[in-house]
Amino acid sequence: MAITHSNFLTQVRNYTEVDSNVLTDTIIQDFIRSVELDVAGKVDYDDLRKYATSNFTVGNRYVSLPGDAIIIRSVQVIDSSNNRTFLEKRDTSFISEYAPNDSTTGTPKYYANWEDNVQQGAVILVAPTPASADTVQINYIKSPPEFTSTTNTYLSTNQESMLLHGVLTEAFSFLKGPDNLYNLYQKKYTEEVQNFALQQMGRRR
View 1 (tube, one colour):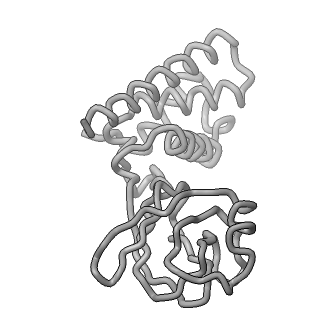
View 2 (cartoon, one colour):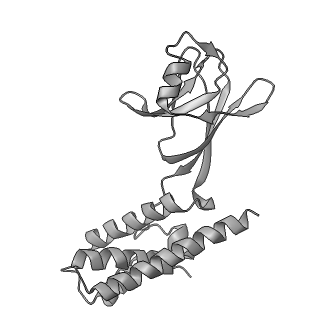
View 3 (cartoon, helix red, strand yellow):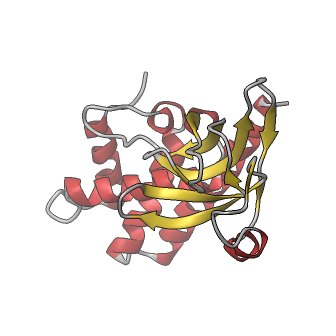
C-alpha cells in the first residue's frame, strides 16, 4: 500500500528530528517537488512518456509544444499516406542557415528548440517551412505529477525509498545538518536513482 502524504511528512521530520515549526508542510512540499523534477530529468521512466499530435500550419515554421512537456524525445511528420519520418534535431544557427526565412518551403526535415512565444507558449522551430498541413507528432517527457495530500504518484507508490532519501538530502542541506548524514542520504538517493534508471531500461529490452 502506498504511503500517505501525511505519513511521509512525519517520516521526514522523524529522520531529521525537527518538528513542523522548522520543517513546515510547505517547505517539505518544495523538497518533494524538487526531487520529482530531478528524477524526471535523470530518468526516462515510462510513467512520464507521452505524445501529442497536431497539424502543421502551412507557411508557419513554429509548432507549439504541449503545455506539460519538459523534455522533447523526438518529433515525427506523418504524411497523407501515413508514412512517418523523424525530424533531425539541430541548433537554431543551422536552421537559420538552411532556411533563413519562411519562403523555403517543403516537408520539414529538421527541428530546433525555440524560446517561449508570448502568444503560443513554448514552441519548436522546423525547417523547411511546412508546405502542407501534415500531422506532426511530438514524443516527450511530461512534467511529473506532484505527490500531495490528495494525489499519490508513481514515485510515491513504487519508489518511496528513493523519494524519501532525495527529500532527506534536501532537508539536511536546508538544515545545515551533519555532513555525514547529508552524505549518507545523498549517496543512497544517487544509487537508487541509478538503479531506477537501469530498471526502466531493462523493462524495454
